[in-house]
Image 1 (tube, one colour):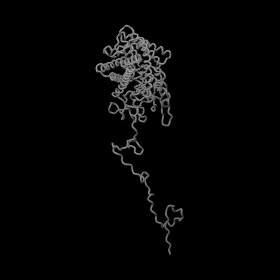
Image 2 (spheres, one colour):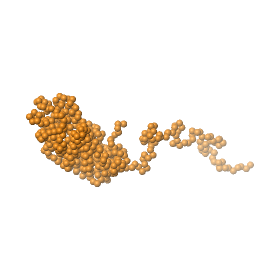
Image 3 (spheres, helix red, strand yellow):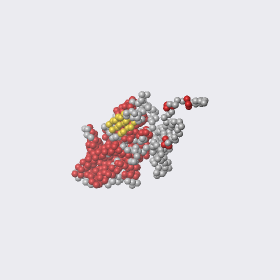
Image 4 (cartoon, one colour):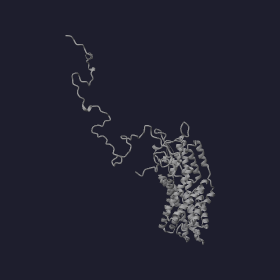
Length: 557
């Protein structure tokens, strides 16, 4: 018998190492793999889990909100070429550009397009933050609104390369935080405002400095900015002390003419107001708080009115007291407080309005103390019928313009702005007289309309000159201040008619709020006609797809 040749498999070793542990031996049928062991894709939907239903059509009541989720993200949430850079309109003033960016969320703010004014080593973070705080301190101490101060601080920090900065402004504290990156520790600096002064010339110089720093055409280094800031702080006031006292007297005299006074009343109101100003300076020199300074400044005008009532002269004594009140009512702080509240800075607004309340209480104390003495002396202090019972358009318009001019001098404005603000005050009075006297419109509505026109013109002038709006607005609202309503309310309280007095004081408060809201509304309306960042198609030159942020937060939900 011949042996068959060995095949290849016959020559393989027959040990256990030649077979896998999972291979059945020869002659045994290969079992079928169990169904649960079949391989499947890891992205397959497991059994028992229903697939996600198709989304409801847009507009359906059952459609889920269109928010971003990790499971169903929009296909074009992040394009392949990256997120496009948001470009702001170069023609808009820096105030509007920075305000629009402050109202954006941090993640949506565009990167700075202005050249960084620093060397290759990077910006000097402590010095930039210090310069930003010092400029913000001057603006806040000068009476600027909190949002405008934040916009200026934001413009300075971005101009010097610190784009991830968050400024915060309250009534007395300024702080700014810079985040270098997500892994670096933030740098925070703050500064406290302890002294406040009214000098609109200095305020305008600070605005010019901020404008020069924020524009691309100018290359203001840190050293140059510090030098100019030191010059601004060292500058003297443009008007001496005697000019301020004379302006206060002429302001009170012009206000007395607005309420029906003649030449003698004009002189009496001017003399009493100048005496009150000197008493206030004396109290300030002795270190007394501002509350007692206002008490001392309000007493001479009330005393002059009581003296004229006791004299045999037939004069309108109330016009003398009303003129003195026009020179004391804190209209600037009131407008700034209401503006902060309307723009979302409620803590700063509450502090400013509390300050206004204290100053008004000081005026009330000073006037009431003299009125009580006059009633004890049997002075015929009878409230007149109406403040504008005999309208005199030409004299009262000239008096309103003179009042605005004197107010501008007391605010230490630049001489180039005095003529414009004087004209603005005359226009405001003409509008008020046309609505209240001729059109029989409510005094509150007429005051709001006139103040809105003042705010509109003031904002447009400030944007034209790249300056603050306060020098063009604050003095122009002087003729609209509620001096007569305040006096009549105090007189009724002194006579024992508390209900009538409180009603008159409520009217004065309504007029004051109408002035503040009208000024702010006029400023917001003016921005609708200017080139501002963030509007597509509505304004020429706008390039951003998102609209201008109107507020910093939602409607409460």
